[in-house]
Image (tube, rainbow, N blue to C red):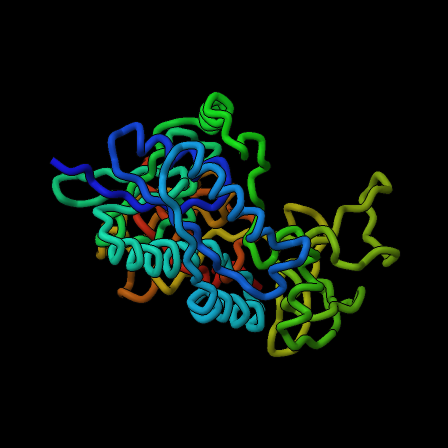
Length: 368
């Protein structure tokens, strides 16, 4: 009986490297696939594709698996980056990792792997898949601090039925230990932050190259102008640093101190940025939200019921009630107001450890 063939995305990072080794230990025939998704300024200090490929190939040699590189840069630019720019130009704050998973890693990559004769694909994501009586469920990882189901919520039944997540059952600390024991060349490599085309570069400088922007007034809720913004695309709700109100008058508390300023609202029509003082200002708190561009893991909406949700990745699950008026939109009502609910970000729904799906936030009910 021949072994099942698994094609795994190997990024050059420690997670996908250990995931590849685990699959081999489990008896699969493993083939590594390195995806090149970005070509613009690829020789710069901010995009490390060349070094990542060297690392991935070196690991493949150590664990004795074949590896090949495939270029998805054109698909990435059309399906992910173009949408990323459209969203920013419209004043929203997109999450390109969510779109990249749905359009590249589990679509272009999956299609390519199947052409190579793969039975299954795998990635180094921290998540789990469970077959529940023929229905494939997306579950949170055992390591709650690394769980990445939030970024995977748009995966469907066809994608999940063909996917393995070898790291879903183990903790990141164990992954590092395994890498050290195997003497992998990237055992001490830092985890990547952000997406390749941004990397660690100054974000505003990067967007400047692709977006048109128009400076305008920065106002308080009372209408007082306290500064000038450089373009609405460069700010996100809840932002505190880099607003540019340094030296402007702050409203003092009774004890003589003053609260920090936060971005609270974008008025696209009037090209106005609204800022508030204080982390708990009412304009930063939302008791409900609306989301569109819906995707459900099972293919259909869950029953309206008490569930939980995340409105950003680094957030604890928050109790909510889901209402689905139609197939294109849902609303969430939260037990406790949520801070800086941001249009363009994903609202992801959970029933315990099971990720049900989600949508893109388009509005919050308490926005002024």
